[in-house]
Image (cartoon, rainbow, N blue to C red; front, side, top):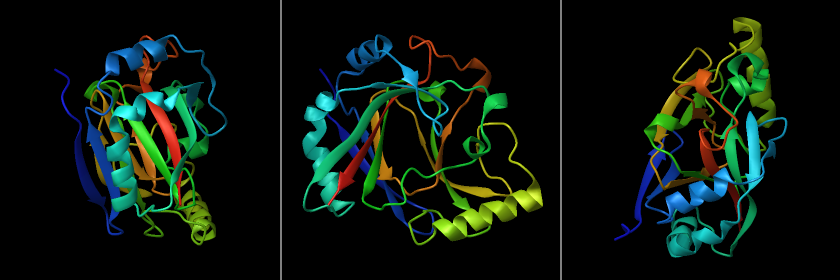
Length: 226
């Protein structure tokens, strides 16, 4: 018997931003893995350190009522939600090849109406996602009013500390303080505002591969609320 979805809500850091976790989300993680492993991947773009492939979001039908409940009650979207993008994603870039901005936590969108959705298809061995506060500015989220001050803070960091080391960021450092973490679990879906500073947790950077049968395969989505 397929376990029923289980929902929990956490609050992160000083700003209290919500993190919604839905376990047993799809009820079909093996089928989603099989679909992802047969997908046609391509370069993920300048900001993403890996490859992506289109993922039809039709499988969310099972959890749609819980998703809309979370989007309404937790994130305050009352007038509707649209899907911006839905992709299978695999982190592949060796640490030595990371661009400077790929070595530190990032935010996806300064627009507060965008919700990032991460669907883990593998277990704790694949890592998870960590959330951060920028030490110099104290920012945990970057909205349009903070973009300039945040960029200035990053420039000050570089002047004081030099370039970020060529590695995937994990844990606290002189630049960023970790304020929360969610562990990957099979069929775990998490939702958070795209303006939150975050970074993927990569337990074994040396083992990264572009082979979908063995890579760090997840599903990533962005939803826009009104």
